[in-house]
Image 1 (spheres, one colour):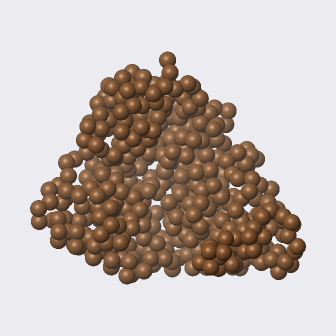
Image 2 (image 1 turned 180 degrees about the vertical axis):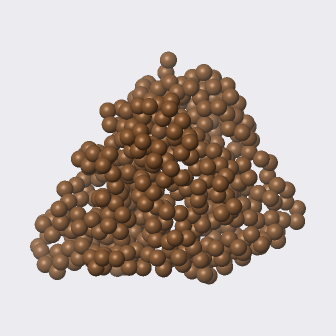
Image 3 (image 1 turned 135 degrees about the horizontal axis):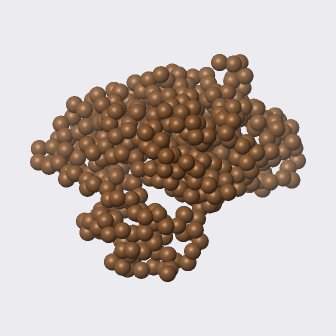
Length: 486
């Protein structure tokens, strides 16, 4: 580690500015703590408000960084192995948007998986790119969407030789990773950019017990939510670039489209401080998270009727590796859905987990968790087992996904065309203006701009009839749907 990694340039610049204590006729208007609601001040103290500054001669400008922000970004690039890095204050959402708009500049084709975050779709709407969809395989035992394989990407290029980029989600929300090294080789053989939504993977660079990071595996661009597991504040992220294929000026211009012109210095300072913390202590911190999660997984798998997925998933459904700090917990053997399990854990046991789906919940373990919290989670699951295992029956298996519907309009074209709301029963054959993603498996079975097929309609209707969980439509009952007006 280079000695400079001990520094926190932006944090230090703000301290220097505050030591000057200038007469303040500058935005923000609260003038440190003096203009803040007293009730809030009593609860949180005053010092944090001294970090809520804006552009000054000492604190730099995110959109034209040349001082402490640039230094902080360079230190982050060095730590994560990138050529250069930019801080993001609109979350990984804006980083995904900037990647997509850059790679699809001028309306080019880019390949995206059907399980991509909705921010990727927003990027297609903003930039006008044309998606080529790749369907991740489904792991049937757990009902999880798996990885994207190099073979799938090669086949996509065979059918779409003019595709300019490929986006992969790795790790996914569930900690599932794809073979990024293999995908990078395929992309670069076709002079295409590999973009990775690595929102959930910033910590993977600090432990050989976890999958390798995207930049380490040949990705040209990767977006990370530093706040998710590596210690910055919510909404703060980074985008790393390591490539000669990415036009730097174009990417930076696109970042100005999606980033606030009043970036939060509290968020940027949190990125600077989190980077320093990871540089100094990352290996021991992440190894601690792995140890805690391994302990939890082993204990959960001893509970009757409960199970917690592990590395046995590797090799199935395109799953190349697994971030084991994600605990994929299922009680489906005793008839409890993930949605029910999450609610039960919070309401009855004061345990909060991250993500439910039909079969599972995901609990995220970080270095900041305590052994007592692991014990509390395990004890809650043991009690649930005692209550429900004797009489519980397994959940029915999920249904096979229908064929992908016909692509008619790009997401951008569909977004700007006139829409109308029609009864759900009249939507077969119509071009839809809303995404629909039933759970399980949480993959959109139809995107805006695609034509509703009979197979997709029947698949969704089965969920609707049994009051299943469906994400996307503005009418949560799905009695109606927005379609393109004809």
